[in-house]
Length: 185
Image (cartoon, rainbow, N blue to C red):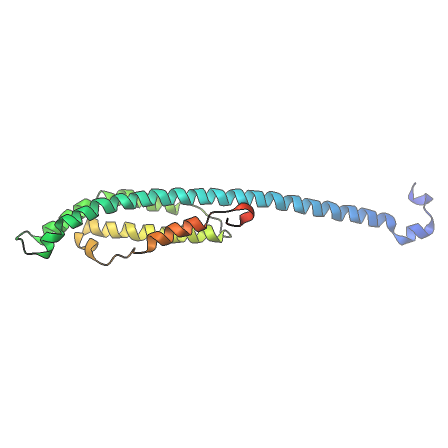
């Protein structure tokens, strides 16, 4: 049936254009939904990739920090009794021993810090962004502490600027774990 064969009242009602309009709207809705699902899947994959990079960064950084702490702390504890009592040994030499113990850890800590800075997180991924920021803050503070200690052993005996930050960094990364439908399990 063509438009010429349609009665005048059908043409006046505009049924044919309504069908076309509904088909166009349905096509647009299906297209938008399909693009939304594809976008969601791509974003979800990105969240998982970011989380994996954050976990790898955290593990490398924590390993470097643990190595630095082990070497430096053992030397600091070894010389501490001599620092507390007048044993006739130059205290500057003892602080130098602590600085010497911290020096080999500085390159590994600097590399861990630089590696964490390379982790890219999309701005709208709030949990991953917070985790990266907390982790960078902690790793940066530890790296600064050991750089200062390597330059002057006195720095290791001051107040610990990183107290409590390790647990906060670990928790922030764990909290950034994406779940199904972006809801954490």
